[in-house]
Length: 412
Image (cartoon, rainbow, N blue to C red; front, side, top):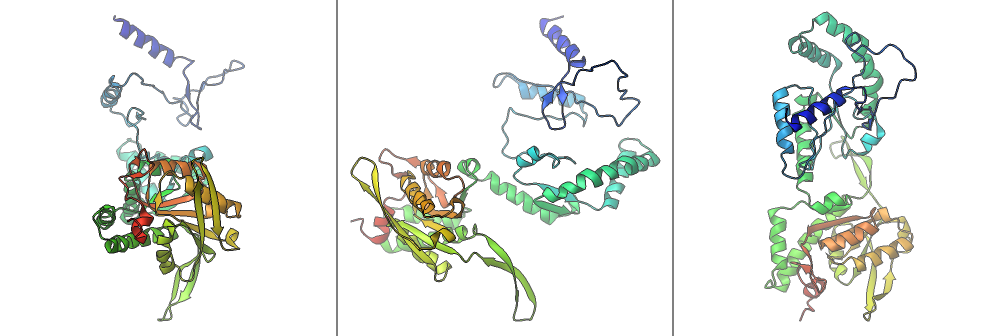
């Protein structure tokens, strides 16, 4: 017998022995507690409902060593639905965890970005279980009904159904509800298409890219574009960013009567709102904000760098009740993030909660995203594109130059 075969036999013998470590319900690997006194052992054959410890196999090795191939060959040869593969070789962007008790443990729930409860009628579920257990598992109908009445239904009523309250999405009729499933699939596709920084920072939002948006970015980034066209297409993009930002404000449900005399249940937007532009580029975004929010108050913050020592002077003119408002902070370009951080810090000093600030810009550099998001994780950043990087002069690349100069015509 080869050394490898002897080693495998030794491991199999140890894993089958009394020291084999199983999985607790909470998913933490642990050894069964030692028995303090001799007593009768649990006979799994005599008691089919007794809890069974899973046989856990870890597969490791260097990169490209063939770990996945070994796992696939084992699973293919076993061909048993009781054998599952949890794969760390290829990192996944979306993990679907399915089971009747996956909402039971709070620690597990906290790991989930979205929780879905499949709500199917009890009679339909019973009919499906009878068909599955009699056809696929060879049980007689009386034993299926007895097990359902004694164990399955009480367990569902006591443990599974109460967990429905934790769900973000409830799907009636299960797999027959194609509309709900299509919406969830579309949501997942959107997440898969997200920029990597959006996966790192959940407070960063990029408006969904379309050919129209890419076309407008192509125009305003072109150094040969006329000033008139630059302003026109910049205003269109700014309007889209502002409207997306407004969608992150809180709202309340409101019912109104339509001209037909019918009741319409809609929403009422947040009333306590103001804009704050970082002078001077941010002032280019004010018209779009006024067009979306009639009569909105707009404050200003000027951050002026003094010399080369990194010191900054800050001038501000803000609404007196700004601490009671949600704030849309306006600046078309997020580069290093230093000026943005200064402005945000000032707003917080004025009493504005960090979570009440939404920072709107047209383009962002990754360095700026890191700088602002790490310091203010509760603040939201809404942008239309994230560019590649900053160059040695701290300009956004590929960028679009000095936005304020191009917009206000002072680039000459």
